[in-house]
Length: 213
Image (cartoon, rainbow, N blue to C red):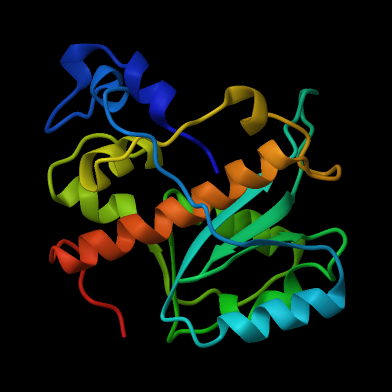
């Protein structure tokens, strides 16, 4: 997922408008995050089980991670797909668990919301791995912008609406997601999906997003 927080902070004041969540405010908040089970999916059999267990969810937190490009003109496809349900988060290593097609029952399900920030880029990059008919993807920032919030990054939106500080690490964000994941990467990826789901549900309860389903 592309984090827009740094770009937002770099914008000059005259280019800003609406409500802005500042970094200093975010850092006063208690740190939050997912502390439940996380399943790392590295085989087709486990992917099939994970997809089956998520089919009953109404809302899935959604995100992807991609190995960074360090060479001009180099373009990498997503290595990781994160999906967060109510009680469990799944992290699919796409090069090891059968790729995107095994997740089609979720990604193409029009009765199941897949929610996150900057989801269009994520979906487009997933479709470059394997074309699919994406359905019911919801970009949370579309709705928060209409509510007058200037920030579009997940960290800022989580601070404003959930009252929680989402710890981010540039080192982890730009790490090699194509290699076996360490605990920091797993925690980082799980939190992106969890915060996306929690934020969506909060906005839905507050009437800022129409209730899905």
